[in-house]
Image (tube, rainbow over all chains, first blue to last red; front, side, top):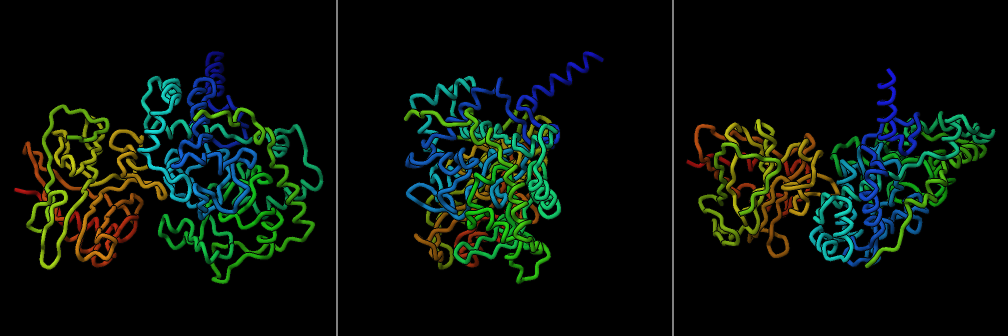
Length: 330
Length: 200
């Protein structure tokens, strides 16, 4: 019996618990790298994530649009900003708790985090690079062959290894220390306003932005009027299923104080504008059943919800030094 | 000769070849072929062949006309897929034949292109009178891989593929380009399947 207990404890320590994953989190879909045994792989991934060498003209990195101080989103532009000042068609989403997701990008066009990694590398509006050139650049770099050797045991640099390293780093971006989490662990409590906001949240928002990850990882049409310039049909472009028209991934609400602007096209800069949308501005002129009804929140109710949403801020994630950049050699 | 294989052990094997045609004209890369009032050429033809049937291991090969359209298959394989199924797509290792470096992986709508046919036709309205046929998609109802049987009683099997019907369809009906999954790609894939037959 004692042996079984020790084995179970050891397994828990090796998986997840190494990162102190709370017991109220669901089981992740991806194996989270172990920062003791996979530290060199994670380190390589972090280096690649922050290195503009991956873009065609070596001007932007993954971190350019996924800055840690924005919860790995981007606040300068509503839409992603690529090389040569090109502007994309979607808002760079915040990156966290990715191990719990099964589809990536606003339209779910990527079936895995590894596959998603290839999108910004090759997208004309983002890094506009080609995979051959990336591999050549890394192979000719004075240090990367050494880093790949450290991570994989030999100096071979391949696309499979590149995406595996970046993915390893992205998977350890875990946010789990907001005030909400302290309350869930029983070591803190919401104030009155947060409590009222939490009750309203559970009543109106939790179906899609489901606790504790604050997303149900699905796709939804939230009644945003379509931008006539972008004419973005969302997941429909991927599935060609008319029930997916203007459906976009439900984003996590964790750290959203830092991850502005909001929505798939970054149209709202302020959380108050987001709440106004759900309260009164939902566009359902086509009378679609998949669009939510307006919530008709009072100003006080909006303020209460905002107070609760602030309790999803995890400063230990935003300011986690182990995620941050370091000097990248050219 | 480069045939890219993934986890494929050749115990006893037999040979499989594909010969592309434009009606009665055997295709060579870059060779101009006149058919009726059109002049066509093929600049690229490559496709995946796969199988989960072999007792030894999964089979996944990328055949490229610029290299060779001949490969070896295990003796116990009787059915092959022209293209990759959903398992091959979503469980990709990105290694070997599945390495995106081969230019057969779509990123924005992730998944592999099962078959690429590129070339020129006087009837194409595209720049340089080119046509681009990239047939991919693994999700139903727009999956574009198809299966075909391989006789198991002969050491060498040759399949002839007439590319002209699918090229005509794309040039005449789709302005010379198909580069995403959907009903048009499915239609082309079915036409390609119907245009493939054992060469005897």
